[in-house]
Length: 212
Image (tube, rainbow, N blue to C red; front, side):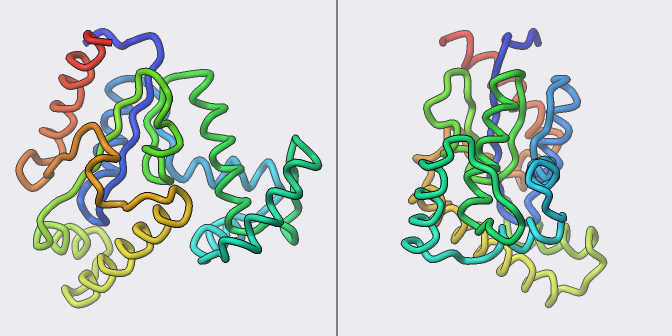
């Protein structure tokens, strides 16, 4: 496959579905950057935050009004926003993550895993937005093996992580995580497998962009 000059692939995924591994393999085979936890690292370095601080902020449930009002006031007054660890809120963290993602995507092709990528890049040309899911039993087995936990704990991890991702999506994009209208493709890894999903997406990229 001959890569387009510049493209973005966003992957949102159910916990334990293999979506991150699909993104990792796809990035390696297409020779492009994978943006996942790299965003947390980049933001932490830029704003002098520890990794623990950024992770804590990311999973807080911010108040829409107070949090956004504070961010908007700060951002509009400074334009080039900067913050210390004592000032930054979870909503501000999201906005600076978005800024970092866009800076990377402006310079080079990339694959974005999670973080409302479908919404962040919804108006960008040559963007393929994907949602990855799998049958619950397949996800339970995957989580049991990956994290070395029993079935009951695997089910809890899946429930908690899926809930967090739904809430994160609703909070920062105003959209519903499972709404298929957010995506160009939805893939059942239980049918395709990780390797099959990677091959399918590589083939889809060529077909989609031949028409654009």
